[in-house]
Length: 560
Image (tube, one colour):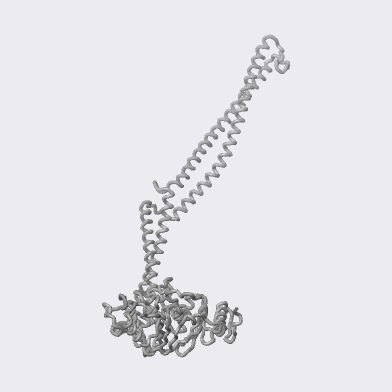
């Protein structure tokens, strides 16, 4: 269906369930501002489009599911599938300059829900003590406070940017201070360990000792190989000499027996026969002398062999002592590895060296963090100076005082007792009253905001009030409330009111009576509207896909 609105006063009336809230909330959904409360029997994937004007220029906002698109005439200004991108497109279109810090620490344009917040009285979220007109208002830091400050002009636009920067710097400073505290605790533990292990050696000293150890090891290996060869050779020589001495002794023993036999034989007979070889010998002196010479040579050979064996055994003993020395040097090498500086071990050195190096690196890191903290402190001081300069140029007290004055006057007009402390009332504080007075107090509060925001009787956004009869007020008070809604709104403001009955006291320029029969979109209306809406959606989808779209292209036939 289509619905037009009068630029001044529009009234929707009808029984509960005829679709008044659906129409009003769909207006905001087209801009990706989700009102509090569910829409019964409503297809949230339906295409919603709203035509509006800003500074004499005509625009169209289109919403289909998660797809948002903004058109100026037939020109596609921008399309988005995410709220953050859409916020930027919306802000540029309507001239919404407020930027806020989101929960992720990003400074970006505020949402459409912030833009419409002061001007929509939602029957499902605006009659309580908290700001719940729209969903997801808490996506930004101090969302409501900064929004109202922006519209009432308590602070200039630069103020919010500076405050966001200050908040970011404070977050960074807090994170760095936590990191700094961690570094300090870690260094304190390391210093305690250093006191327990006071070995203060440098890497250069350690490398020198390792080199000495390596040289000693190489020398020991060479000496060990040479000594092993010498010992083997001397042992083999000693074994051979011992065998030769044994053979010489055996030969002498046999020779002595032969000499004795020859002496006894010569007594009995002159020639005699050797019992071993059966050779015949005479009993001459020459024969006996020859035997004696053989004995002498054997004795000389045995003495020589025994002398050689003695030399070999001396050398073997010396080599064995050298082997013992090698074993001792191996023990010294192990001691170098295991013992450092008296009672301190090699492990102590490694711990000391590692702890000292770690402490040095941590000290460097700590100083770097301290430099960052100091830089942030200087930035925050600079921001404070800039804020002070803005405050000198723009007095924030005057707009707030004007709001409080409007609030007190509205309470009188709506016959509701002024809240306690109204002289110090905060912009974002909503009044909370009991019974029928609650709705009247809230309308008085909203009207004070509108009066404070209006410039030359104009508001940047239409005032939309959905069923103000939520406080169970009696008929005289309801009549007075409705009569004053239009009167209390700025004179040039666009006001849209939805109510169950047609109030004669509300001087509406356009009255729309809704019935149950008119709730469903007719076939004729669908045939008329669908080509244009499908064309809007398809062009936006192609734009998001990176396809170049020309203004004169028509995609309405592509939709089923």
